[in-house]
Length: 72
Image 1 (cartoon, rainbow, N blue to C red):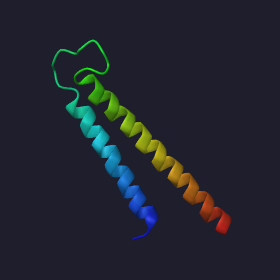
Image 2 (cartoon, helix red, strand yellow):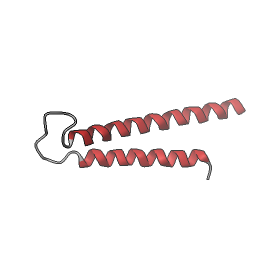
Image 3 (cartoon, rainbow, N blue to C red):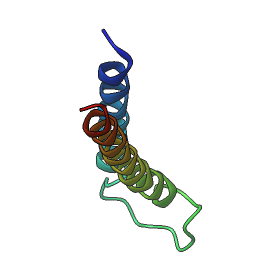
């Protein structure tokens, strides 16, 4: 396996973990007022993890595609 495939698999795993954090954070309990208290922080971190993972995967694809196009 090459590095590109390993990196893509790691990014997909990170996105899945972020989605699980979002699902766990959405239990029907009263929400605390502050963002760093209780389950609000779990939901917030899960959303950020999914967004950053998707951005990293997109940037990786752009870098790989430019290297392929330059090599031709």
